[in-house]
Image 1: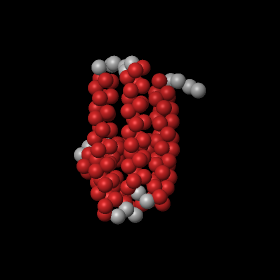
Image 2: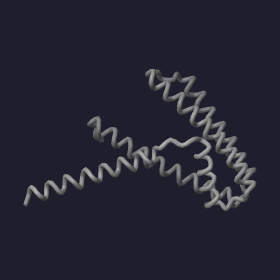
Image 3: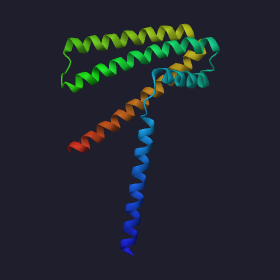
Image 4: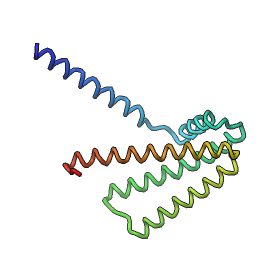
Length: 151
């Protein structure tokens, strides 16, 4: 009887692990920037009730934003592969570029959206930022556990 229970527990554990890995791989499937932009605009349309011209303008803006994001990601990945850390000047330049891009994005969003839509957009962005922070904390905890670091 004990053996049967142990076997069942083992089967359930492997099943759940396999399902979690399948979900993760589906989530990490590579989409083109155009596909990502289309999906992002459609989600924003559902939340913000965008009209056709707003959708068109946002699609171009988001496509451009995703292109720069992917380029930065590739540059950081290449730097990581060579085990090279950026200098303080490079870090300053990267952060400065990122903040300039955020300012430009904010100004363009103000021009495209109505005040009510922009208010909703800001609330939506704030929620995403909060979730990202929670996920980063969770990942940090996992890394520390792996290394054997305790608080």
